[in-house]
Length: 241
Length: 221
Image (tube, rainbow over all chains, first blue to last red; front, top):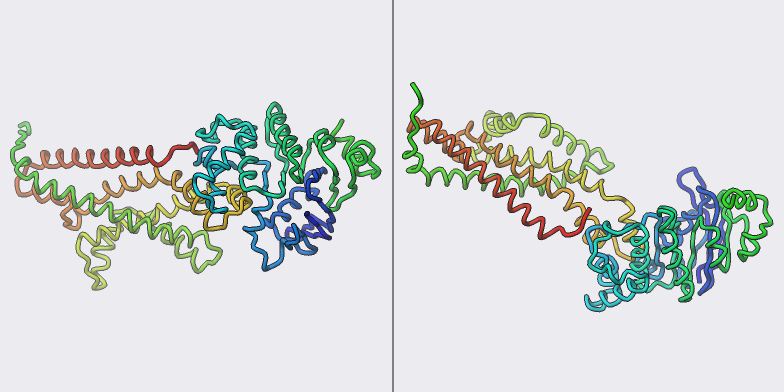
């Protein structure tokens, strides 16, 4: 379980997160929505310890993420992350992209690493692309590769940072389908997203971020369908037209 | 009266010419190896936040890139000589080429490094790789591809610029050619053959480099 307790995060004088509390249970899908600059992506980076926090605590399976003694490389093995820009490794084939971290981080044998990578690539529908180089693939395929690459590390949680925002509209569907599949597999996920309809469909909980705080949180039927707060209503009326 | 070509003497002296060509290749290879090693350090120093490191590196790069190679060789041979430091022609030319190579390659390395998106780093870290692994498997291999061709060009430049060794009596291809033609007065013949040899050496280098790059680099960037 991920417990986020009163987290404050600043970049210089700019306070981006102003006291965030959020619990994510095992098997839950939590979507984080909100305007740009509301701090949603920053929160993911903090969970992953890519960013430090100034105050509060984030606890992943009883490990205090930002404690000095925490081995962050080990921690990150629990937390798969996929970014808006898919960040495929252009000098490696699709298979090598997915097999590299299992081999050098999990220290699997080459054969085992390739097996794991192939399994995850098949899972996201890239079974025919093993020897392809990622830059020759579409954004949607590269994003699915990024998902498979993260899954190959056998993470307990997946963090998705606006994974469809940089995609051409016709490619969004295949990536969302992959996320749906993960949810059906029972993966615990935090999805920062602008896909409101998707958030409504897949989430157990939706958190609406506004100016560095969680303005409203609850099941999608509440937050998206009948929001209580004015800021939520305003935001939704803007994005849903 | 037209010039009459006499090639015999050139063929007789071929062993000396080939020897000169070998020295040319030798000094250029060495100047690249040492130049690369220094450039790595200079590039790191230049990107440092500490002026103590970045300033000398910047100075080196600026002087190397904005003064003629001829001047570097003169300084290494006659300039240092004036201070009682007497380098052999070989060492003087080598030092000058190293100085310039290091200067140019510093910028090549720095540019190559900066051209790798920062997000490659965070994506790798998010997979649990430690910092050393990220450099070893992700950043440096990509950087190496980007600097490979500029490095090859620098190598060719070194081969051609080593011909300035002629000025300090070095026995590389140009120096050797100069000596042989002054003994035989077959100036054109010797220099034409030397030019062909330079051409062949650089073509050979470029050809091997492209073979190696096909072997090494499979993906797109």
